[in-house]
Amino acid sequence: MIGDLFARSKRTNEVVRSVNGIRRKRLGTSGIEVSEVGLGTQRWGSTDFNAPDEALCHAMLDLAVANGVNLVDTAEQYPIPSSRERPEGLTEEIIGRWLAKHDRSSLVIASKITGGRNVNRISILRDCEGSLRRLGTDYLDVYLLHWPARYTPQSNWGQSLEYDWNYGVRAVPSAASFDEIVEAMELLMDRGKIRGYGACNDNAVGLMGMAQAGVPPCAMQNDYSILNRRIEENGLSEASSPALSNCGFMAYNVLAGGMLTGKYDDPPAAVDDAVRDRAQRTAKSPRGRMDDRGWGMTLGRYRTTAARAAIAQYEVLAKDYGMTIHDLALRFVASRPAVTTSLVGHTSLFQLEETLAAFRKGPLPPQLLWEIDRVHLQNRLPLFSNDKTGPDWGNEGLIGERIP
Figure 1: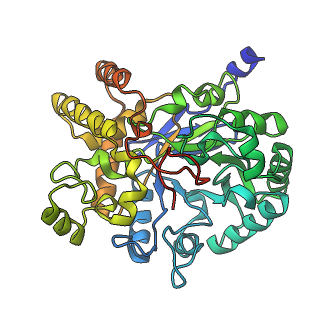
Figure 2 (figure 1 turned 90 degrees about the horizontal axis):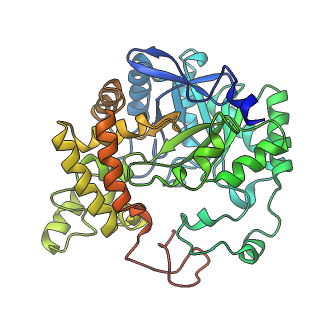
């Protein structure tokens, strides 16, 4: 069976062409081709201090499409954070108003149903219709579960020390089965509402469970970066390969919440700065989310002692090879055979231009990849070597980080 799958002529992640210097790759067995970089939209129209407004969002879409990018990733839950004036679903509406003036086929749109207890056959069908209405389109290219319906070790960002099946029964007592989820997705595909489906923040168990229940998913989406390479060891890369499920992979947080841009080097993030007066000044004029108290605390995993040590080593490597840490981080992900596309969020056109320039430089040279691996082997899980502990998601124990 594995040999038959591997012999397929249409393998996921295979480069099929280049548009304005940006590579296009196959996304699973869906027949969809996506650019190697896509637009992340979590904060489009949000209440955040530096969130892009609608005009800027539309300008970014214009610039991206003109430069060979065809993928935009969104969700019914976006924007984050939201408010009564800027409610969940607004991000899809912003994209929809741009779409109303442009060719629908110019974009590959991936959206998500809110995960957890919300996921069942009825809600999958209902919420997909809601996303279609807000986007002003009659189909989605990819429809994903934002979080698994079931309890998984990743329910606390993977920091729980064991998988407790009994805890899962208590936490999600009536989780939708793989059969129920896939049946609903197949129905949406049969109706022409979606071209393919997948899951976010899931693992190899979720991927293979869905693949065995019917039409296999075309995409998985997880946190992945030079600081977080868990998918290479937890089975997801292997399970999604052409040799097994032939499923695409979308990487998010490839810049580790901005920590891999270099902007928090000096001074450090405001929430970490021991120099009180300087920290207060930085917080008043934040460079990004890490200088904001709310986001800074939430995204603490990207600033663990181990993470900052790894970043320092990667910055030395970047300098040795004549590039920025930003370019090193993006080009590293672009070099990985398991990755179909990288989802990158931006708050300015300049940031988007920097991203496009990095991807046009292509994958990293083999020798640099070996050097990166040497650093990685000394510090394998920097994001999950947390030295600031607290109760887990179930308010039990003293592990993990607080999830707001």
